[in-house]
Image 1: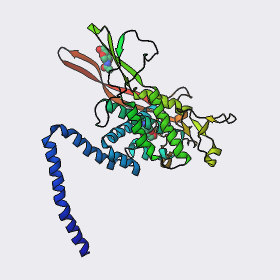
Image 2 (image 1 turned 45 degrees about the horizontal axis):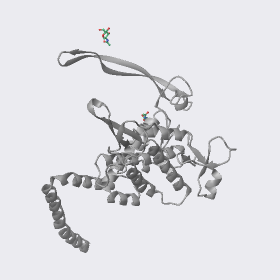
Image 3 (image 1 turned 180 degrees about the horizontal axis):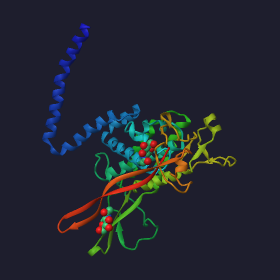
Image 4 (image 1 turned 120 degrees about the vertical axis):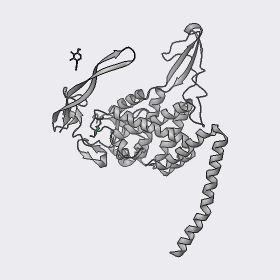
Amino acid sequence: MKPAYVGDEYRMHKIFPAVIIVLLVLFSSMASSRDNLLPHNLNLNSALTCRLVGGLTREQRSVCHEAADTAAVAFEGLQLAVKECQHQFRWHRWNCSSLTTKSSNPHASAIMKRGFRESAFLYALTAAGVAHSVARACAQGRLLSCGCDPLGYRAAHDPRGRKRVNKWEWSGCSHNLAYGIDFSKKFLDVREKMDDLQSKINLHNNVAGRSILSSHMEVRCKCHGLSGSCQLRTCWRATPDFRIVASTIKRQYRKALMVAQEELNNGYSVLRGRPRGRRRSRARPAPKTSLLFFEKSPSFCEADPKMDSAGTSSRVCRIGRTSRTGSCDLLCCGRGHALMRKSSIKPCNCTFHWCCRVDCERCHDDKWIAVCK
Ligand SMILES: *[C@@H]1O[C@H](CO)[C@@H](O)[C@H](O)[C@H]1NC(C)=O
Ligand SMILES: *[C@@H]1O[C@H](CO)[C@@H](O)[C@H](O)[C@H]1NC(C)=O
């Protein structure tokens, strides 16, 4: 093993001075220009992120290294999508909890490798989340490669379609939707390099999520003029609150179309779907915003890591109407539920004393909750 040792020593001698030079150059460039401090740090951290985030494909890693700061914002968009998924599915058997535990990348989860209705929802939501975060970051000046949407919004009408009487102009800083959508395509669509049906469906659902985002863009305006007389209005185009986008995608999830089995076998490239339960109806082209899936979802009643299912035992459920989402009947899969007392201590009967003290009593707060067996 002697030659190897010599080789290592040789390499160390060669590399060590180089490392010191790199560090010196970095340090001096940071010190010489304070303005550069932030972008430098950001790029170093972002480049590290590209390496640390799990489940990226080789193509995604290269996009990440090319545009590390934009990719860092894209990861924020993915986290936003995970958070919204957990909100939208909080009363469902599958509740997106598996997406946070493993890697910070939802695309690494088992469910996104499947063709379930839930997978379709996630593809649309993550594609919209990335576009949303990048579009906003551009307008906030957080990225060097983009700024406000230069075209802004050139409609002659307000969002309700009425003609404006007052003088106004599009001069605000519009969220850069076009840039956000481009990056979402570049960063997520590149995962789907197989020419199979699953990739086509994933791409379709990505497009659906981004179209839903585009169709909910808002116009925001600010009034100018003497004491708010609104003689002049400045307007810009803004991405909606992401909750609105997620709720719309959730509605599409309910009416998602199953891609017919025979088309799966034949591998047709044109995606057609039909609503669930209407077997006789003729297949028709799926609109851009509808979600497509090709695999029947499991019940998600039992724990099964292969399907990202944690099972529903010990989940809190709602007593009452049996058909309601989150009802103990639906959530507990017929196993029944147990009532549990949940006690906590909360501040109560607070009084405010001038000035400035608040005194509270400590109260026991006992609640009965239902938990699936
Ligand atoms: C989601 O399900 C998991 C596993 O069953 C559970 O631990 C978690 O509390 C649930 N989250 C919500 C918000 O109900
Ligand atoms: C709060 O104050 C009210 C009136 O002073 C009293 O009747 C009540 O018992 C107090 N609540 C608790 C939980 O101590």
